[in-house]
Image (cartoon, rainbow, N blue to C red; front, side, top):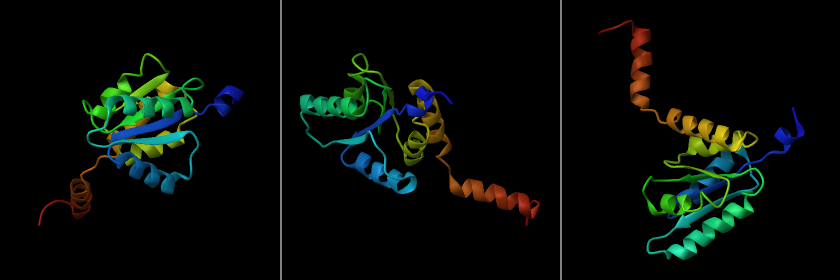
Length: 150
C-alpha cells in the first residue's frame, strides 16, 4: 500500500436541521469509535444564512478540504443545510451527499482512506442498502422456510 493511500483521511462534515447531525455523529462513534476531522453543524430554525455558511466553511477547513477533501453529508435535498453546503462546492474539494442516515456515516468512517469521489460512491450505496423494511425481509425468509402456504 502506498504512503499516500495509508495517510489519506477524507474529512467528514454533517450539516443538518437542528441537532440531527450531532446525534448521528454520536451514534456512529459508538459503533465505529472516536474519529478525527469530523464535525456536525446544526442549522436551527431562523438561523442567519451568513453565520451558517461561515460555520460550514470553518468545519470544512478544519476537516481537511485543502488536503484530501471533505465529504459533506446533509439531511434533505433542497433544504437549507444542503443549499448552503452546495454554495461551497466551487471553493473547496468537496462532495455533498443528501439523505444522510446512520449506515452512511458508519461507512464514511470505514472508507476515509479512499479518494473522495470513490468514498462518496460507497457511502451513497451504504445509505441505500441500510434502508430495509424489516417485516418484508422477515416474511420472505419465513415463507421460504415454511415452503409456501398454510
